[in-house]
Length: 338
Ligand SMILES: C[S@@+](CC[C@H](N)C(=O)[O-])C[C@H]1O[C@@H](n2cnc3c(N)ncnc32)[C@H](O)[C@@H]1O
Image (cartoon, rainbow, N blue to C red; front, side):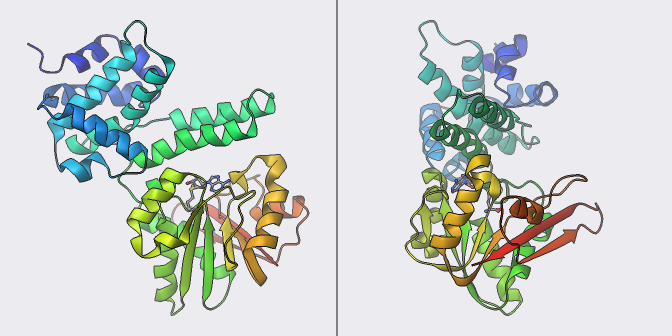
């Protein structure tokens, strides 16, 4: 008898499972023999599903709760994957969505447990693009856009055990530091710093440490639109739990002012960007404080953050860029002074 009938079902008809974009066909083809060889119901599947639901709410990863359990992880991922493909008649939309969201956590868990490469999911990118198209076409409201982006993006962040990926950044620690440390070049000395869109708080932590290495003190704070992501950040950084706030950068009322505010233009829809920056400048910064943009990768022909701020009507106070020593990748940031 096949020990992994659920994965056997997926193998025999993978189309429905692949359609939810948790992985590519190539990833599935390479991973299936390993998943099928290991999946085994050891009696803990119901508890594992409960833990996955907790993770979707910002709780611990299944790996943290169960330790190394490859058979369980492969079994649960298979049960969820095959149910996507073979939904029972009378299934509700909510139940189907819940299964897909559970599988977003379960499949990367199984990959980690079995030493497979992380599944090359593209569901978040596709969903964010389609939400943006929906807004342009007048089919998706601003509130639904933010809720929709939160669902897919934060599910993807929460599925990973890598602190950088939980902050939406691929690559190793060297790349992380290279791409983020230039924030410290936009102001001098010690500062209180608000990271708008703080995700799991890793940038708060990193800037604090990198500043200390330069003999400076950065006291980090965070604002996050996703309550479950803020819950993860508070759990990771209990010493700063009361510095992590939940709100939308666009209309959040800060409980205090900061010397530095670090934010991204793309956190709000294009027609809201000017208002969002003005709001942070006026409400979140001390007089003389600095509002610094996240430093994106700039491909040839793309506008720099300084150009984007100028196009929105702001007077740029300074800009700084970094070229990666081996890849030649260019990152640049710019700042405004209040
Ligand atoms: C890519 S992460 C950035 C992490 C870190 N700040 C960095 O720069 O590396 C973006 C985070 O911003 C949050 N976010 C997006 N729109 C937001 C908004 N309008 N207000 C507050 N947070 C927002 C997302 O939920 C996500 O966790």
